[in-house]
Amino acid sequence: MNSKVKKLLSASAVTVGIGLLLTACSGKKQGGSGNSSSDAQKSVALVTDTAGINDNSFNESAWRGFKAYGSEHNLKQGKNGYQYFQSSSAADFQPNFDEAAKAGYQTMFGIGYSLKDAVSASAKKNPKRNYVIVDDVIKGQKNVASANFKSEQASYLAGVVAAKETKTNTVGFIGGVRSNIIDLFDAGFTQGVKDQAKKMHKKVTILNQYVGNFTSADKEKSIAQSMYAKKADIIFHASGSAGNGLFQEAKSINQTRPENKKVWAIGVDIDQSGLGNYTSKDGKKSNFVLTSVITGVNVATRDIANRAYNGHFPGGQNIIYGLKTNGVSIKRGYITPDAWKLAQEARNDIIAGKINVPIHPSK
Image (cartoon, rainbow, N blue to C red; front, side, top):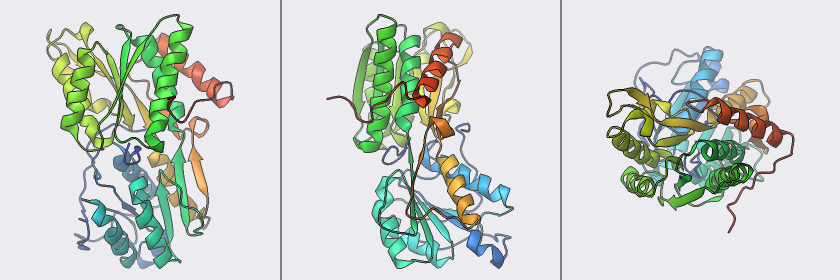
């Protein structure tokens, strides 16, 4: 989730192997692309937020969409193909867009709400190029498309699962920075827990805390430690790379316990089950990532890149991806059959309009 969660997508959470790296503002490219000059109008560039391309979250998911787009159209990473520009700080956003435009990329994506101003400014400077803001909306600019997600819907399903699966009747939510985007995850998860608990005639306590950013894994580890100490046995995070702290703490705890006494984590944006492997005290190899709430950033980047490829770039539009279009989802993971059935029933009810999921937590 990255930045504005979202700050923010369906593949395993593994480190992406990168053979070609553009550091912020450097403008230096290593190696040849193998793309012809005629591919320039099909080229796409991704500007990351500060979490970086290997954030096990939003940026990584977006990059997977790029790679799928490149494979689909026989385009390679590099000039006239697809590329990413990594930002070390907010000061890199605008220079990275300038560098991407200078390099000739036709369609450029800003990943996360924090890049909104940079996207808008660069689009004004380059009216013949296409721009996309992911996880925010830019209005009144015909060469800018917006991509957003009904993350509250998938988070609701995770809440249903958590309420069904908890053995301690205490679960937790850790957010990055309070914002409209993170509200989607918070509100959806909380409501899902409450609704399912009510159906089961039991009370489930929901612990809720925010890191204050999307990068401080140490702080999140401390928050997770406190929540697990308060008997939470399932914690869902929407906190970008800060979420690594949750996985570190869950692993540390589970390595000291027998496998059947483990605590769980719920991943976000991409399938984060790869971060949950561990060996329990009784020597059993196991995994503690119950499920992951998938934000289909890869779906959005590939979809919009393809629209541009086909000459139908959706400039001026806000495209929203939800359960109905598989733009958001949850992974089966280690969810029990009974809990999975409840989640699928809730999914169908949301799509049918029988359940309206809130987009802001109740006061």
